[in-house]
Image 1 (tube, each protein chain N blue to C red):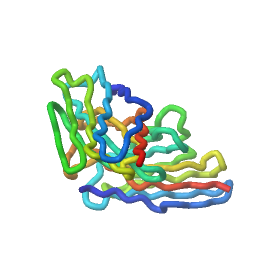
Image 2: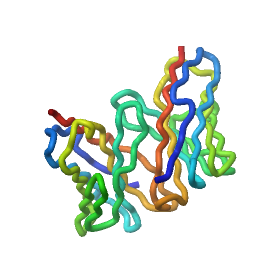
Image 3: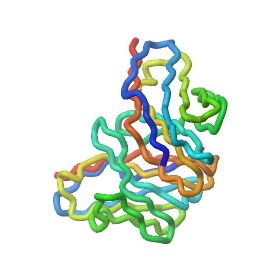
Image 4: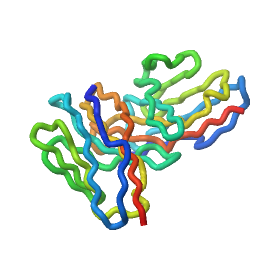
Length: 110
Length: 117
């Protein structure tokens, strides 16, 4: 299983763009990168998933360099409601067992 | 998107009793389900992996006789905490993997708070 490393915490302000980087140096060829958001007392919520280059959806963008040893979740114009813990997970398809690291606690200030 | 539902969301039980938590995949068939527990301000800790129709695979340190997992159908897995003790109080989360929006995506339930008194 590819181990992931993220910053433990980040602070931002409303309206700013937030970039959270995850390191996964031993990512395997068939591994995808998935980001989840978790609020207190709730299960993790899927944000975005990618394999290479750039993926964008209505809530975030995911940037993956060519070597795929890291990835960056970009949240445009954050609001107070984006205060949460963000987890980066790396895994393949069939035998994928989602294992969580410590995640990044993002606090958005007014 | 795919939905995974847990029930109950909160439960209080007395020490020594057993409590069952259900995890359902509502719009897809979940060949594999995972159970986690999470303590306040900590990450999710994987307890076990269950595949439909077979015995669950437990992580090291998780007592299989205490945390009974049954995955009898492609849409339902249950976690039964037997002879519960106050130290079993925690937030339990299930997740499911299957052919949904993307075969590679894992979806999580809302979580279940267990309080043992």
